[in-house]
Length: 242
Image (cartoon, rainbow, N blue to C red; front, top):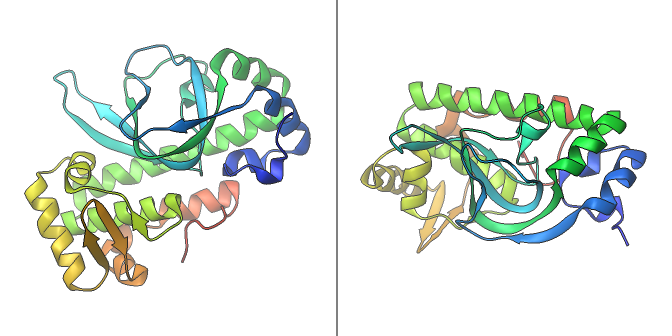
């Protein structure tokens, strides 16, 4: 029996009209998101689309030589595999689970069928795609213009938004890979944030101790995509705290 819409923890699914959710719900399957697992591979057909309820998924831009950097971050605010909504079946990027959780999945073929018959589903997903493009644009802006400590603070805020808790299961290696920098640089930046009281570090966990200090470091590089998400899709519970 399909779950009640009010029990779903993915914001996009909660934003659907009751009729649109009723059409989608029988085709959703909940499975775990395991850290370091691949949601979809570059240039391979996307067979399933996922709506995370907990955890973090990174969209990684990849070069032909194998270099990669995070282009966008997805949690319970979004969905992964949106090329399907845009009449394609693959992406040159990779989707990788960074923090474990769970997600609701639907086959790509079934979602295509439902998009044709369910205008509200298409509307919500297109709005999300627009918000995600804003996020990736500001990630590129921060990567090119912001200091490393500002980029790191921005990433930690974005992660906390989506995990909805202060304890973030993140290693120095993971952060260095997402930001496209050396591990030593991330370590220096984390130490600086800890000295000022913005975060606390323990083995494999970064705890946001003072969000306002972290926002102060991130400065103008954090906030615009979050504001636009709210405008397009409303305020997710426990996300984008001011």
